[in-house]
Amino acid sequence: MRPDVNVECDTDIQKRSYLLWSPVPIFMPLRHRILALALLAAPSQWVAGTGQEPADREATESTATRLREKGWWPTRGDAARNEFIGTQACADCHKEQVLKQLQTPMAHAAWKASETEVLRSKALISQSTPPFKTEITRDRKGSTYTAARGGEAMSGQILWSMGDDTMGQTFVVQAGGTLYESQLSYFRAIDGLDLTPGHTHAPPRALEQAFGVAQSTETAQQCFGCHTTASSVRGKFDESKATPGITCEACHGPGATHVEAMQDKRDDAGRGAMLDPRTFGPVKLADFCGACHRTPLDVAAEKDFLPVNIRFQPYRLAKSRCWTRPDRRITCVACHDPHEDLQKGAKFYDGKCLACHTSGTTGAGHDSPVPASADSLPVCRVSTHDCVSCHMPKYIVPQMHGSFTDHDIRIVRPGDQYPL
Image 1 (cartoon, rainbow, N blue to C red):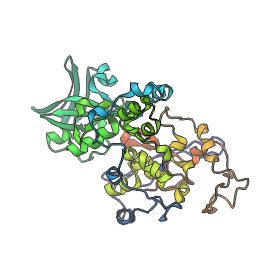
Image 2 (image 1 turned 90 degrees about the horizontal axis):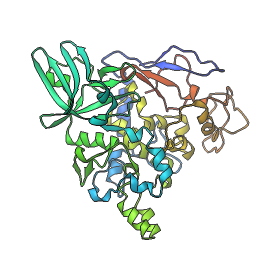
Image 3 (image 1 turned 120 degrees about the vertical axis):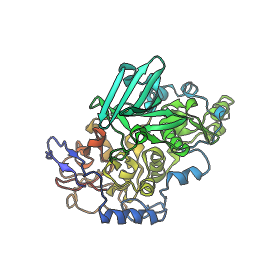
Image 4 (image 1 turned 135 degrees about the horizontal axis):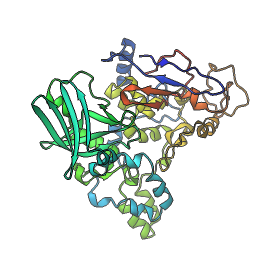
């Protein structure tokens, strides 16, 4: 499973693109199977990619474990409906943050079918994968997803589109009272349908397989928990009452108690009613984002060690050499403000790298050991600009018709294998 390195790294331009490829089906090498088993058996103090415990003994946990802890955690679904108060109430005091957050991909992580641009703009979307043909049609009642073979067909109403459409969208379809994840997703790069990421590449044999994957209540809760707000209350899932996208309350918790306390001038009680990730250490911060973007132990539990795991940034970050001793200067929020749109220019991140790499010496070179207790690390001997273009390369994922930045921060040389 090695990337095809098809662009050289030039120290002036420092722009790389890699192609993640592997035969289908993908077979995991023995050493990776052994690694997966080792991760599953590892104690909770394990720090991904190092085999060491962090300096402050902060333990990475699975999302399932975090959800059993007291207090709010993203994707939790046990609050009552009336505990949620809505984004507008947040905007009364936090207007600037709310307005910026509403423009982020997270705020658009899910759309109702009636509001999905590609469904509204196209009367027909079709894809033929013999012997099956898939069509998405639109009429006054909404959008219908149909898989057909010969004279038989299976149809359902599209209720939701998952994804902000930067890369593509997967459809949640209701058929016979069951929710399905569509077998085919829409990808903007090809302006058409292709296999939904995570679905098997093996040709479907049955019509239902060509239609999609039936979702259990638990799976649907997990999916909607990361794409919508308040889809589950008091442990009961109800997609019809979900708020599209990730809002303030999806991350910080239901806000009714907070708003009431702040209005009554009970500031301490009000602040205590909301989850404030700023109080977390670096490992818990990564687990916080990993509730949806996958923690190291979430990936290990799913044995998801295929190249498409590049999508799981907290897991990839935890593999980094930088993460040997977790540091708040390289957590997710150190580089990405969740209340603002993603910064895409490489130069923006130079300051983030140089927050740690400020030492005047370059050390013994790229391969010099990182001091275990250093607050200041050597500056790269090659360059101090466009750091991420060499140390966090983008990989093209053909299955997803797009590219992802690898958050496993490291020295990358032409010919290196993609580190699972």
